[in-house]
Structure formats: C-alpha cells, structure tokens
Length: 253
Image (cartoon, rainbow, N blue to C red; front, top):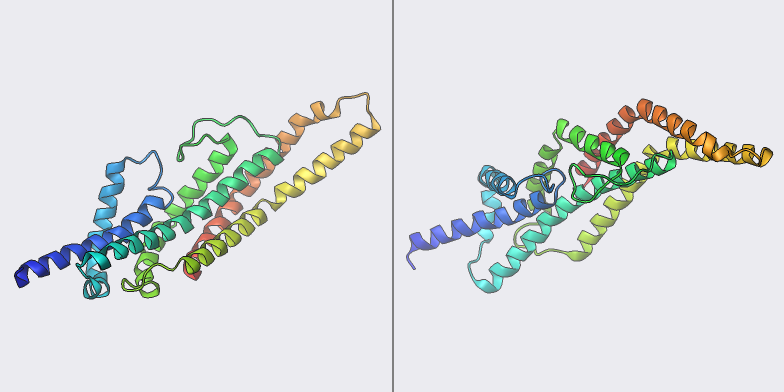
C-alpha cells in the first residue's frame, strides 16, 4: 500500500469513528430519535454534524486510528457505546418528564386512555403528551442540542479514542442521571401531589359524614377542574425549572 493510500484509508477511518460516536448519540437523543423523524433526516443530520465537528476533533481522533482489525473493531464498538451513553442520558431526562406527566394525569383524575403519541411510538395520555412535547419544544428553544454537541466535543477529553468504554463509569453516570432527573420531576410535581392528597382526604371525610350521598362521583368533576386550573398556572414554571435542570445536568456531566 502506498503512503498516499494509507493516508486516505486512515482519514476515512477517522471520519467513520467520529460518525460512530456522533451518530450513536443522535440516534438516542430526544427529538431526533423520534419515530416521526424520517430515517434519512437522522442520517444526514448525523453526517452533517460529523463533517462540521471533524475539523475541531481531528487532532483528537486521527493520531489514534489503527487500521488493524483487532484494534479497529473494539474501537468502533467503544465509540458507539460512548455516543449512545450521551444520548441515553438525555433521553432518560425526558423519560422522567413523561413519567411525571402520566403521574399528574392520575393525581388530578384526568387519566384517560392513551391516544396517538406525537413524538414517541407508544400511546400516551393527553396530559402526559402535552407536558412531554412542551418540555421538548422548550429544550429546543433553549438550544439544548447545542449543549449535546458541546458534550460530544468534551467527551473526547473524558473518554479519548484510545481509552475503551468503561461500563462501570457509564453505569455510575446513568444512575446519577436517573437520580437527578427523577428527584427534579418529583419536586416539579409536588404541588399536584399535595393537591391530590388534600382533595381526596377531604372528599373521603365528607363521604364518611354523608354515606348516603355518592360524594366521589359528585366531586370527581370538581377535582379534575381544580387540577386543570392548577396545571394552567403551574405549567410555565414547571417547564422553566425543567429546562434549567437539564442545562445544569448537561454542564455537570
């Protein structure tokens, strides 16, 4: 093989390795990984981001490229796992918001049957879909995809190309992300938890005092109406705190 051919082969492998990490992240991150986004759009977005970032990452990738299969195959697997880990961490954060959205619908009694989802393929209740889609739009409005790209660039300092994927460190990161995300959404849903406890406890006392009247059936529309009114006044603050928490998580990781 001539030196020019070897240089060309190494350059192509360097671009492919960068595409493995960036493409795996884009495949898992919220928004781009949606079933509503065509596969061609996701592929071309990952290719465009790889070409744009390769100029800045060349010195961190090219010197460590080894065309030998015994080294190249584990390196490709490692890059896919590192990129997928970054995407999964952001996806877990959105899953926590979907969880609290479904929980809010149940707490205020607005837990209808799941309908056609907008972003995900699985059916969701209307309130959960409204909350999750609004949270995703807020994140894109605050340029969270820029934070993901910055995290990808910074990942080459934390997990260089010549250091293979560390499952123990990845599990610690996933656990910390799950803990932070679910503690955050539980705090965001705490007004609705308090509302559900107080209202249902009051209705239970009233039902005990007047067992002849079906208090639960009479009070159910009032409980749903009060919950929707509370949601109307709280949803703006919820989404703002959710976006702030996401940015803090992205910077801390």
